[in-house]
Image (cartoon, rainbow, N blue to C red; front, top):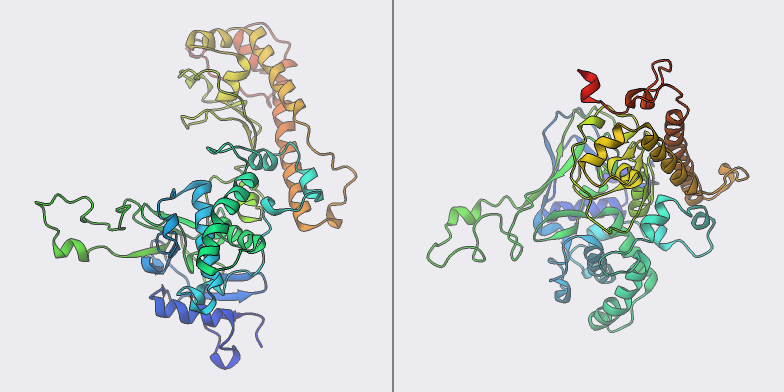
Length: 462
């Protein structure tokens, strides 16, 4: 018996009842097309995808018919068809659709796919038991901050989960099955949606996509999912359809037939032979994001950060930050929404810089650059903010003797401590500079090569 099953294992060596063979048979019947250079394997850790031969970039290696995905729209749960296609509401609605399909067993048209999914609740923080050491160690981390954040419903993730369970799952499941649901089984369904679902288009929205979800995550990914997002939200048509066509403008047969009807996994780089083939679940996801959504973390993650939430009493001004382009203390955050954080290099976002320096307009920013005392006050504010972020003391904790989830939280604590310490070291260096009171000298010491200029003064550059 081989150490693992794959779609290329001879049938004489693999039981017809194995979950992989059942999945493969289902995919064939559903019209899922898998490149012959890919090998889908069932190893102890779960189903994954590997390369048998070299695959060049920009090649479609998997094609999944749109009718094969499981979404709220493709399910029988008509009560959910008007829910949002993204966000927490979409996750909860899809989890209910998935839960009901899983309870149908072999009568579900997705059974061959559903039976291949993990049978346990994915170990995401949302379902960690109260009192677990991992929860106490996560205090004041990004994990706790994100878990306790309140969405549009003004509820935390856990509060929203149980409100949806009581208000929607219980009545709808009871209507369809005649018995009350199991909160543990719904937790499993939600954890599968959280860790495996894709936002595919404006019609299906968030969906379970067979085979596409078998590719594990890496920031250095080989493949990505491609789809035409802008389809009709009423019927899913890519081309002209009755929902957007004026009565005087008939829909041609060619328009109807030109919809490809597939979601595709496409290579974005050369895939060597004999390697596991990876997708990315998000190019900007931090380890806290990965743990909360998928139940795992990367060894090294440049997207890690330490963030703060401030009440927005006024709109931040739009200013010219070109003077900070060469900074090693302040990071120009390119998104329009205000985000207050320190990135993995120990640099504070320019929104956080504005907040701490109390700058209100361009004149105030220019005066700040010209004032050594004002810059030092900003530095003191940065140090105070970092110091107040009290993370767990890991000095007496044996990282080798703890549970896997506790170990992940400890790694997050250590990463955040390193970010805070790097940031404080940089701003302490500014305070320790005893050069003249000129703006440039206040932020850059020529005698210390480690201190690079954190802003570019156009006046001094001339």
